[in-house]
Amino acid sequence: MSTDTAAQILDGQALAARLRGELKAVMTNRLAANLRPPGLAVILVGDDPASEIYVKHKGRDCQEVGFKSETRHLSATTTQTELMDMIDELNADDTIDGVLVQAPLPRHLDARAVTERISPNKDVDGFHPYNVGRLALRDPLLRPATPKGVMQLLELTGSVRGKDALVVGASNHVGRPMSLELLLAGCTVTTAHRFTNDLEDQVRRAEILVSAVGRPRLIPGEWVREGAVVIDIGITREGGRLHGDIEFETASKRASWITPVPGGVGPMTRIGVLQNTLFAAEQLHS
Image 1 (cartoon, rainbow, N blue to C red):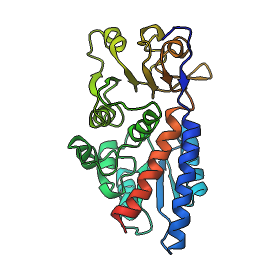
Image 2 (spheres, rainbow, N blue to C red):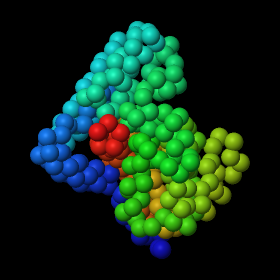
Image 3 (cartoon, rainbow, N blue to C red):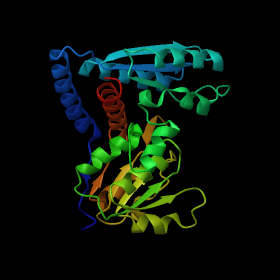
Image 4 (cartoon, helix red, strand yellow):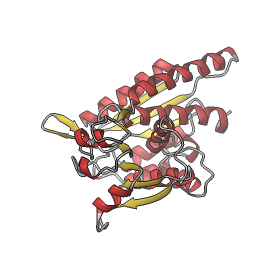
């Protein structure tokens, strides 16, 4: 591939719009069969502006496809017990198929305990150890939402089986399950993290490059292998602009496909949550 050739853009906004259309068609059939709409409940603790915007987007997504949507907005001083009690209430609500607690939580709250309190069959973010464990054992149920969305973007690029994939970042919520999804799809997977000695060498060899760190321009575009598929999950606000982990301008001249930031992975994460909610309604709570 010539370095003058621009990569094709993996447009998460466009794919998400198409998939929401498919969900609306499913909802038409559900309502015709007198089945209740799937229900998604989001708990927001505190007043983080970015979280508030994201929760509003989730509510609009539900409204568009015809799901039931509930938002519980709690104060930043909410106690662990109060939050746990609310999760228990939603776990027991037969009209709610998905429960998620918006991150980040105030520091005095135990995020891991919160994740584990959500019923595994309502864990539409896919963060519960049970669901991550199912993925690791090649028998997924509710899949982590961001990696689920990324895999649907990768389907647009053709088969990934047999490709060398690098995931930069090893977080429990994104990096590790992303590696598991790629492994399940038949890739040869390397995970890079803060102890990786030569990140440049790893990046230059990757046919599929996924970065999920949240550090602006962590990866220079010139490192990207020509013809690689580049998925940038990291997103950071700096100087009034949003930046990804990968230096886009140069990378887009070397890659075959690349996600923009914003407009790439973010919309697909929200689609993953909706798809998980429908799956829970149809397969786990019917």
